[in-house]
Amino acid sequence: MMSHVSVSEQSLPIVQKIIDMSGGSSNEPPDGTVDIQASRARLDKLAVLAPIKESVRVKSIDMNGVSGESILPLNCDESRIVLFLHGGAYLFGSLNSHRELAAVIAEKANAQSIIPDYRLAPEHPFPAALEDVYTAYKWLLQQDIQPRQVILSGDSAGGGLVLALLLTLLEEKQPLPAAVVLLSPWTKTEATTEELIERYKGPDITKNDLWFKAMLYADGHDFSDRMISPINGDFAGAPPVLIQVGGNERLLEDSTELYDRLAAQGVNVTLEIWDELFHVFQVFSSILPEGLQAVERIGKFMNKQFNLLRMN
Image (tube, rainbow, N blue to C red; front, side, top):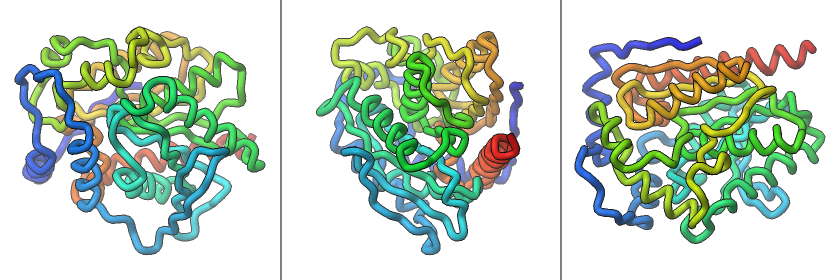
């Protein structure tokens, strides 16, 4: 099922303010450079707009050599796990930048979130990130956690990484999670700069330099590799999938094309297009009403999947 969600007139000034604070997005061709350290710092700085609740417990964990955090909202059901993979074009993002988003999703799902601090390119290009999140998933199952107790979720490149992990599990015939939730997933790294510019619709926080970022991550591997551009994978047999994407972002087509392909492969998939909104708007659920509505929908979906599998 595909649906559109409208944004209220009252929220539009908030939307523009967030875009302005993030540096906005132009339709000018990129210059072929990526300031990695500045971008990492900027993404972490945006996290101060959404501080984590004092009632949320945060514990450092080691998952067979992959560090990370367990995020535990007050009175959550610790037997429910959201394995959350942060975004950031495989180059940026951290526990700091995505801790609050993982926490609010966990709260709405009455679960705990586990965030792996996977290795980033260009220091650690493909397949390092995929190896780390695969290790984290296998570690979970070694903790007496059943696959039906785990939901995979991720935003942007983290969404693409979720899909690559799911493909790996399917191809290796490993136990599958209960469901998958994707926020503005980056599914088609093979898109050229010209294609990305052509997609531009309006104010967004996604930059034009995605092709160059993909080049740093792929490190010479073919962009069309299904583990780098998971849009090219076969997901037949996958668990239910929920996709949320902004209606005014450069990666909208990554979600609509993924929806079509998953549906054609027989996957139970739902796509929500939030009109007028930008890339991973859910990060700002504390100040943007539609962001809160979106994470509440995510929580409802996750609760349904957890409960269905528990009854079975």
